Image 1: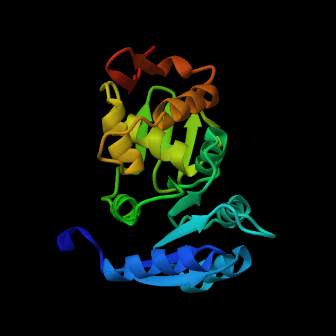
Image 2: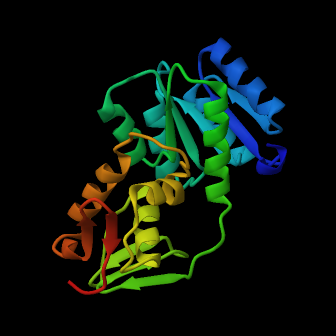
Length: 231
């Protein structure tokens, strides 16, 4: 596995539970990453600003400022650092909320360290991926990967980071049916079988935001999803 990891990557682990913090940070160090630690949201925000880590592993259940508030502040400040959310909550709405706020992935406690390291590697690999063409055009939909904006018929639409990546990948493969597995790997970096409904959830978000041009985003039952340049 040594060839798959990036030993130069710095990962900030944020958790108020000392045992979890030590376990995750030590596991990252053994895997070849540089692990730094924060025990609260305020410290995490400052460390992202000053130390510029390559990835943040962020616990949700923290006192005073929870992980959702930290994530929201990071994204509001224009911090695009990839974030993996750790949550002990099994409520699907909480997981969706994290993704909507701009999390790149989530892991539910209790978790295996090997699974978490796989997620870390996948998110870092995706963040370091090759550059796409600056402008992706599909009918009235234009995705600008340099300005990180998307518009429909000249009207800018507000997208979360995950929604933007999904739309950009669909636009880069316009008129091609992409399976759930292909989208999970390309957008979320998950390259193993999963029962997650995250693809369906984010496709529904895009449909609402593309209205009244949502006819360009089509589900091909039993096969996947495609973005077409003509309705």
